Length: 247
Ligand code: NDP
Image (tube, rainbow, N blue to C red; front, side, top):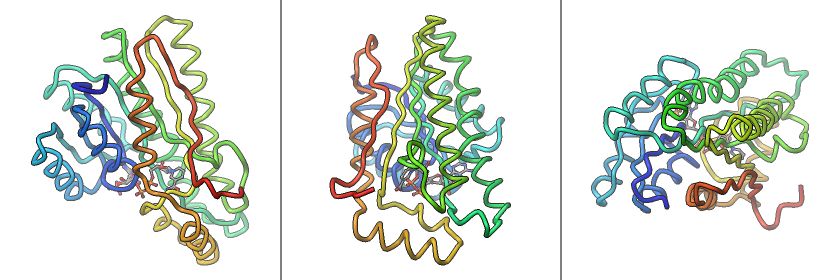
């Protein structure tokens, strides 16, 4: 059941996070939206609330441990519990290694890796106390296969895969009743390509997405499916992308 679940969503100001927020709220979840662009969060939350749903929001920078703790605290203060967190914030400034865009490498490590760690660290004490919780994360098809241009981006997403899989196993071993789901999307039409500064890579990716990209609502469907599973069931890994994708 999704109804009445309290779900924190990171990267909720656009794309996959926004679509998931609207979808889950439409099914009766109480969503807690986090990202840096607070104005965007506010208008998404307003839309949900005006439609009869439950949504609150807070500016969140996933690279900051205390910012992650703050959004968990907000959820607890507003709703008294947290049932799930969707660790979805990310960026993809892909480029060839030889371009040496080292600041972008650092940024991807900070957001795509440390952001996930910070989110888990912030919510875990609550989940352990409740003896239940659901952690969902957005990896990528680039977390399953290697792609030229995606050495660092892909590396951050391979990390998410490893981390989430070990978390799943340890949660079972420790009997914490914390479930996991990792999502591996490909070519979803969002604002993600706007993070690419390398001209050649950006042009190639834009062409590919224009040809193959699908809507973020499809990922929201998968998030809803995973969350809807009964407590005794984990549906753990989803790859989802365009039916026509040749890669
Ligand atoms: P968007 O660019 O539309 O969304 C990215 C989200 O991440 C935004 O809400 C952005 O919000 C947020 N974000 C970025 N940096 C931070 C930060 N420091 N703190 C908090 N939030 C942050 O792209 P998508 O919806 O596509 O991306 C969502 C996830 O999906 C990412 O992890 C991406 O890697 C993954 N993904 C996407 C694919 C695609 O084809 N689109 C394919 C595979 C995976 P703000 O700027 O307001 O902080």
